[in-house]
Length: 247
Ligand code: UDP
Image (cartoon, rainbow, N blue to C red; front, side, top):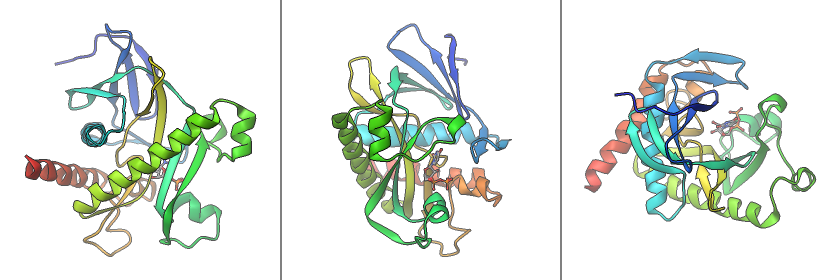
């Protein structure tokens, strides 16, 4: 059944957003497109939208039960969920528990270094500019978010990290790093938005030691390792196994 009756209001690299009858709510549809390196690499992977949607929904529900406000409202189909309409803040908030990726490309920090306390990096969300890293002074200059909201965003992001690290540990997964986006709902509440999936989290299988075999996230696509769907499917399988144990 097609649940989409509204107008397309936004199409990004991995999702489409549609209006609904309720002006305060939108539909979020997950696409099968995979992009990396600021969309220079692009491909379609059958089944990816479904897996990212179901994984994101499970993680948004987990956050909600832990007292974190998110935009998620209700799953509508396996690739579609109803969400609160928000004004997105042009920030990409990255939390890193283990050094890898851009941190190791751009600094002399050794790959695999444990980061305790976790490192929080802020990037300006702008594809044309290539999502540049921000400093406190640049944020002040750009003037798109005030100090108090920024402090709240950092506090929530660190709480989300604690919740997710503990949760994934129980699934024999290590949460290496991830990216969050935030927005304001119609009442001005700060809420976690976008998605939380292997497209924007690095997850390593703790039962494997081989540095390539253990990768269960978008790095499989970025590094042409293959097995993207199997890896994402494994994450969903472990999440579903865990929720069955809880009921
Ligand atoms: N990330 C993301 N979107 C971006 C950039 C990064 O979701 O535009 C996620 C990425 O999947 C990883 C974390 O943020 O989990 C840190 O990414 P990093 O800065 O290391 O960049 P990369 O190595 O992916 O270029």
